[in-house]
Image (cartoon, rainbow, N blue to C red):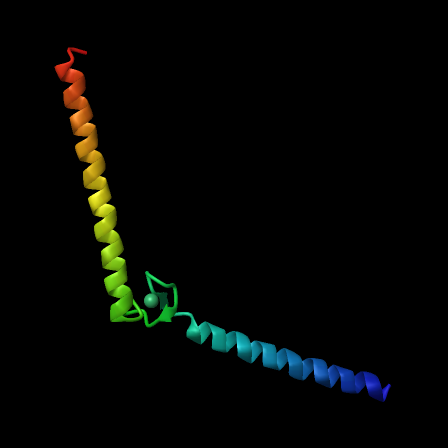
Length: 86
Ligand SMILES: [Zn+2]
């Protein structure tokens, strides 16, 4: 019977440990992830470093340029269709 009591004590202390771990995790929760690389950062920041911000902006610029190219392509296609008399 003593063994069971010991086991109970161990389980109780384990439960306590898990509970405190859970509380700790809750304390970590308010944070964001870097938009570029996904690393954990303070909630008042958007990127973890200037390098990531630059990378992200470069990517956005490239995306925007690609969109302009597409719009231009569609406009030219449209003009060709109209010019050919439909
Ligand atoms: Zn980053």
